[in-house]
Length: 250
Ligand code: AMP
Image (cartoon, rainbow, N blue to C red; front, top):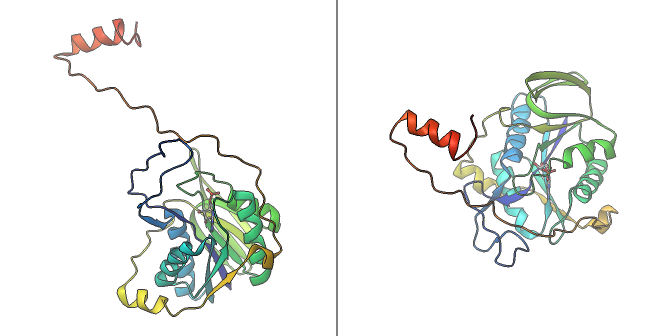
């Protein structure tokens, strides 16, 4: 069973992002970039399926400019077998990413496609669902457990107030939630080996997809700064302030 994993290059989750002075975008100058954390979980799940003898090949795909090859190499160091970069420049919206991934799905015919539930830069939470619709595949989103059984995959989903298990016919789409697994670290020998693994590059034209845009980013601004807190000397003063200053109790 072939597994395709979508990995996105994003600002590292430890970075405190800043907006550009003109508010046009996030400032990415000299900022550490990494694999989107949910995509790292997706790679880990695919590699575990391979280690369990269920998957035969794991392919990592990323849509972006040449710099996203760094994240594909990380996925290869984590255990993916080969990589695909779809070469696009600049910001590309989720619908176009989904169309490009659909073209890669058509080419590779994977039985399982695993994506992150969300990219931590755009917070879109759209690509997996759109890909499911375009590829006409069943989807198990926000997965916290994945069990492949014959020609089906059972996905336990994290939903408000509990868990839901769905059974999907393969081929299927899965998007990962935080508790699905704990990704491993890449070892130095595996990082070295990853440099030699196959990485193919396709253009959108080769995949027959037009890179169009329906969205314009109008403004990027940081959240309002929080006012400094104060210390109260006792409960009486706290109650008094909540009643008379904040007016949140009566
Ligand atoms: P989003 O819909 O942007 O929140 O992203 C959800 C998931 O779609 C990510 O975790 C990735 O698995 C996948 N994805 C989004 N953008 C890209 C991209 N440029 N390249 C590869 N995968 C992507």
